[in-house]
Length: 91
Length: 233
Image 1 (cartoon, rainbow over the protein chains, first blue to last red):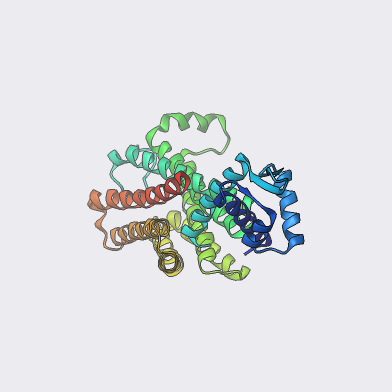
Image 2 (cartoon, chains in turn orange, green; image 1 turned 30 degrees about the vertical axis):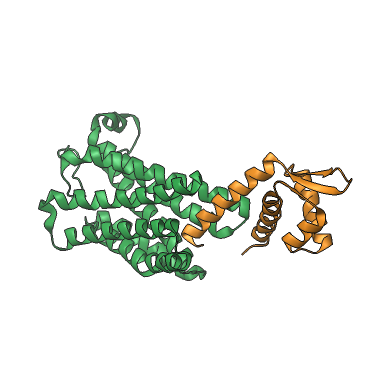
């Protein structure tokens, strides 16, 4: 598999983790769920924020949280379709 | 029709308009699969989907030329005028070249998909298969026979593509991989019907040609159903 494909899978796993948590997740939970190092997760988060797939926010206790956006939800759907298509041909 | 061009396909004349509709449907299906494969390649950077897009595009382009050759038979009047306006243009050459391009492009598309399925990376092997495709295409004119075309398509499907699709279905065990396997299985059956038709000389039975075309179309429709189901999820 190519490097880019792996990257897509990481992004999917991160976004899926946020969605599984009701669309909002704390950085520690995301770190645990996405199975990445802290530095790697920061790089991916920067990209997700720049692509408007994730928004950074603060909860009532002023803890940092990440919220999935419409673009992020769309990416999850698109990725599942691509995965289904690639699985059907198996290449 | 017969006075202008001798049809190389030994098929019932009344079936040509219906067959043209079949070819257009098959062309659109393979083009859609090609475009979606290309989209997958652009998003994932997985080069194998670039090649899959090329393979299906080859098949789609082949069907375009088959439709063109059929239109020469259906509407010769449209092309007769070109004899006088374009130097060296002959309607019979146009018909034959369209058929040769059809055969070569469809077989080339199958070669690409077969090489993907069998993970063939050796350029000489790929080039050899392409030359066999070219030979099969030229034999349509030289031997006035489509037998080798159908036989080579059958070999590519049975030896390379079908075993891979079956293994993938066994691995994935889901509806979409089954549909892709079934689609290629129907295309194989279609080639087998055409081989039987030409090998046993049952040209006189119009039903064999119609059956072969219908099974082939069904194969492409199954591939389309898979794509629609994937995109609807």
